[in-house]
Image (tube, rainbow, N blue to C red; front, side, top):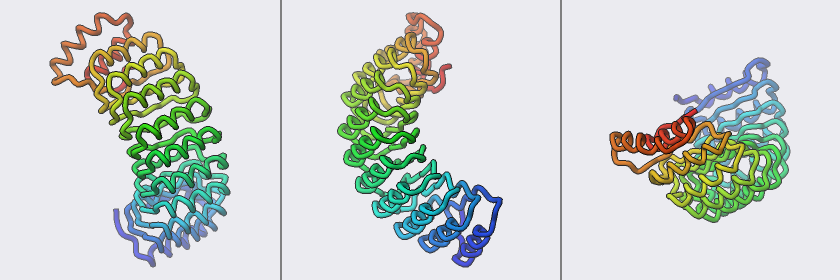
Length: 321
């Protein structure tokens, strides 16, 4: 963490224009601002070796986003761009969306904590329908709401390159969750979906469970810090008996009760793909009670794999295989 003066930034960017060996540049928390972002944008149009640029928490704003987006339309080497925490807003998201329709090399774009809202999410969703190279899009904590989630769901039905979508803490609610679940039934490329802290309830968990019974590509589903409850957990347990591709399911901070934890463990007797039941939260009062519960419950589970899964659920720990 530091502060680069404008002359220092210009000197660095001039060197970047001439450099032919540097592939990664990380300048997070340097308060480069919009002017600094503009300078880096000019350098990106000239540089032919940089593949990763990290400008997180630099207050570049919409103006800086515009300059970088224009550069992306011309740059042919950058594959990863990290702009976390740069309040680019919906306007900044829109200019990046335009760039994504033209750029053919960027694979990872991290726009978490950028206040893009539903309008920004919609613009990016439209771009995803056309873009064929982006594989990882992180939009956590952007207040995209159900409208933004719906737009992204439509894009997922058409997009053929995105493998990871991070929508953590976006208030997508029931409507947005249902739209994404429907998209999962049709999408054939997404492998990781992060929906933690989105006020997802039991009914939405059931819809996601139905999608899991049909989807054949998703390997990681993060539902941490939601409100799926016992009913949602039971629905997911039934889906796990049929799904053959999911390897990791996160349910931490989703109090589901010991009986539902047991249902998940029993489901794993039939499921052969899940290798991590990520930190199931069980509302047991203390670890001593948990240990006694573990001994009693595990005696009724038939194989060692599910006994370990049950231990994870009762004690609230992670890997079981």
